[in-house]
Length: 404
Image 1: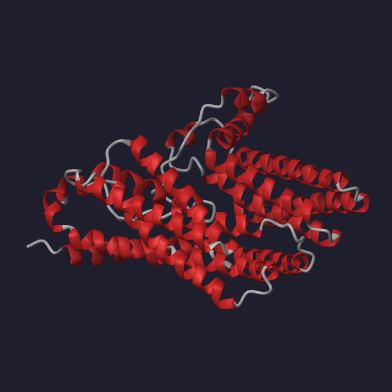
Image 2: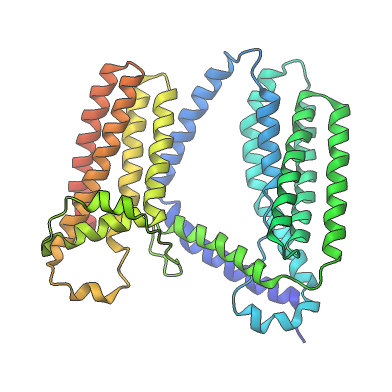
């Protein structure tokens, strides 16, 4: 006799074990120090900024928008796998407890984001609305939790709909309604908050009605979405540890490949120079992470007023990028044909060191130029000199030791 509750417990246990296996590498000492430093610095400047908050600052729009997006982003983690299409689909009529438990699990794991952002936006709310009692903000958080549950159930019901366009339109409309609800709640407009809440209830009932007209569970869609989320986690974890389950995503990007490989001589010893460059460009994991860190670091450098903190942040983001680009060295480890290349093993190490130098120095120059944009010329010299010195020391010390 198939027991969906016992099946869920075993699947959840395996899932938590899989997550814990990689979280040990992600939350290592290096990353915890970086996170602590980032949060501490941001908290200090956030408090200083709140003391000078403009009277016309759009607090309601920002908090309402963020709360609305949090409520709308309510994916259901079903923990299903491809073999379930064959072995579990026959027990679809007995999977009720399983899917109920996955909805509860999905809500619980998303609570951390709600409370984290609610805690972060609390000081902004109280700075903008000093005359309001604190229980009004707590009431807003309670409403957020209720709307979150509603969106989670609505998303689950719409997963039965085969037409992707209908699902997308429904999500878009609910997102706008969610933002409107919390915008009016934060602004203190009870009438319009009530009207938009009624609209949300009508959408909620519409989704329920539409789902009831669908036959069966859309197993392919559930498995596809769960695999996409796990692959996103694996791509992130792959920056800290080898992930054998990762399915590589490759983009052609022919014009960019031609640009970065144009000056490489056609010689054996430059084989891995070519390979690492096109891997960096064509794999979304590397170039995407590099550009995100470049943009985020640039925003910090541009907005933070203290020169010394800016310099520290520039070096910090250079470290993060270099540390994560190191995984390029092992990217093709499962391809046996590379061992047949008539290339010395030392040439491969020299190639990864070369590209790490190039990427780090490009980032150093861009960060240094931002100091010129803010007319901080001493900071420009410190960021440029500090970035170059750190790059040389880090690559010649830590990176070469790891490669050895």
